[in-house]
Image 1 (tube, rainbow, N blue to C red):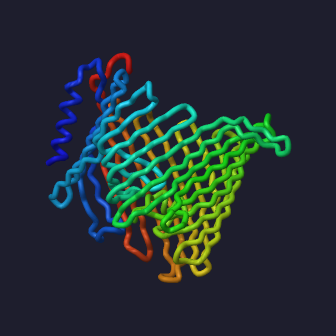
Image 2: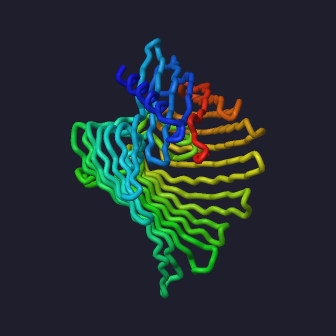
Length: 421
């Protein structure tokens, strides 16, 4: 009831503003879905949900607001949720802004919302941010929930234009991010978050370049790294690319998307991945690559594998193909993936994904998998879009998995002043 009252209050405030002060915009989303993913019984679950996503913007007063409310109907039991309700005020002279309420945040923890406050100071070359409140988990996403969170983050953006007389490299851009976070959920955890990105040229005047990136979280209390990523990319003459990557992955959610399960080598257990690959793009509309990799999982043997793939673009169609192979000694996996994305008309878009997979497992022997996933979007009018999704995964050793949904979204734009159009 409190959440509904807050929603009604937001509507009254937004509509009370005169048209010249700002404008209200957003969307209303309705969906029905059936699925039997592994967390549920074989009979699956059925539910319907409605979302209202609203924003208020006044660029003259530098005042903004957001509201996201949802209602889910499952087993004849409605459940209401207030996902977002914030007010943000900017102070141009102070180069800062303050946000209060319930708002989303994305960092190395994942995507979650906070009941609390956020202060940001931003200049062209430097940003700093302080935030505090109670974290709330967002469903089906890599996310966190807890009793309290406090943190700070700083970002330094530089254009050093550095050149060396001894090595044929320049450094043209540098971005450094570092933060501290105190997170409490039963116990208190102290984290250091970091990220870097360096970009430059090879041989100065050439069309060759490099990019080095890293990101991760260091748990001070456990003295260990978590979700660490280090990647280097070297591009020669814009058409050839060499890429090396190290990733330490630790899942937060039991749900893996179709892409994560078959398009990437992700699982529901901790793993480390080493990857080295080569990519060639002879023309703007076609590219192919070949990668070798090594994967170590928490409760498995070390495995070796390879990935090969291509992408071809036409005017209204993109075709993607990939082959994956992974060998653990006692276990092995081979996957063939195809994706087709097309827009036959300006109002219709289709995305079809198909995977063929052969698994050899010591635990249950051979298992063959055929998976299909289809997304359809159709624009009925400029402000009305209908979408449908269907997924079915057949296993020779296990029960099949399915997901089907139908949704409609209405976009609106009220009280928008002419100056903002």
